[in-house]
Length: 523
Image (cartoon, rainbow, N blue to C red; front, top):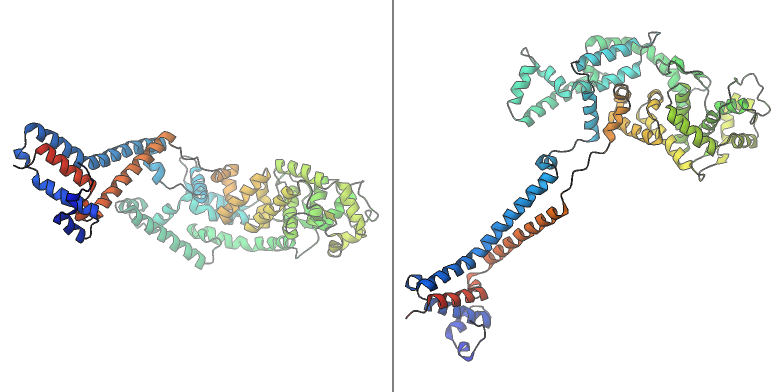
């Protein structure tokens, strides 16, 4: 067989007709040969046994190569796909969605319920205990509201919804009936019931709305204790917001101070600064002998925190956030709520950044007496502002980040809650995680840490990586899939090619020539 065009071929009327039909001269000649050779080939029933056998083998190869290629590629791809799934955790590992941080935190809360205990009973006990309060029977409303907000996660939102929807038959019967239908339909109905009840709590003015799931007696107890709490909270909150200045005794707020705390009085940034300057012989100045300045032991860490809170030190970031963070750290330390490891870290880093002598000299350069500054802190504050430039000092960025994280935590919760939460932040990294958990938990943050302790940080741990398949398995699977795609592409090209072009191809010409050679020419 050859594809050369001789003089005789160029004058064939059949080729000329195909060329007029749109084929090129070479395609027209091949098409004429294919038609002529097929017409000259005798029937397989007329061929000899040897020729017929060889022709059948040729046709099996010619017509079966592409389907065999496709089937073989699919088999190889399936084999390596099974190996890939086996090495990467199976289908469930790729289909099941990974829970987010919020879902993992809710799961940790539910899993912490002791075996055999009833979550609702535990929840009600904590709410009643918060209403009973401290030894002076003062209700701890921050704790009460936090535990009220944690209730749906502790008990389970599905259980609460089932109890709301259940009739005389009870929640178990309702759950069995709902599980008989589609899972999505059951979940949608439970979610709708839960949201509807939560909206009712908001309409009733309950704080938080999840208190609607508690008995009416607890709601009445909150209303009765709310007034006494508001009286104590107003002056305390005013001090932390800067509306009131003077001396504030933190023991006036129920449960804010740990039982083993010492001096729990707060005076504000400038006054704390004056007290500490006058307490240290290295930084005492004329005017420190005034009777209005209370005595205190020298404390380098307290002095450095007071300098930042008073605005004397320039650090990277907004001064308001830095002062707010320093105020909370000072209050947490005095209330016995500051984690010992965080206190030790601050003592090393802050004293290294702000030695007492440097603070004393900066205060003296402002030209104001300590007793005047203590009596009129608002007058002294602008005079001592930014006296120490430490923005580019070593360790300044890390310290500023800590103060800003505390300030953001205070914004997410409240002044009192952030003070109480400081006992769970043992390092700057833990403080960052504490802030993230506060964003996840919202008003339930205090209850989450009371319930889980530092185990709550496990919700922020990265999930284990999905195991990877061996490189050879991935490469073989990719090659098999490419082979399948190539066969399908060739099939599509063949289907899209008109019949007049297919019969003018080199393969059709080869098939016609071999068939005529093996089966013989008609006599």
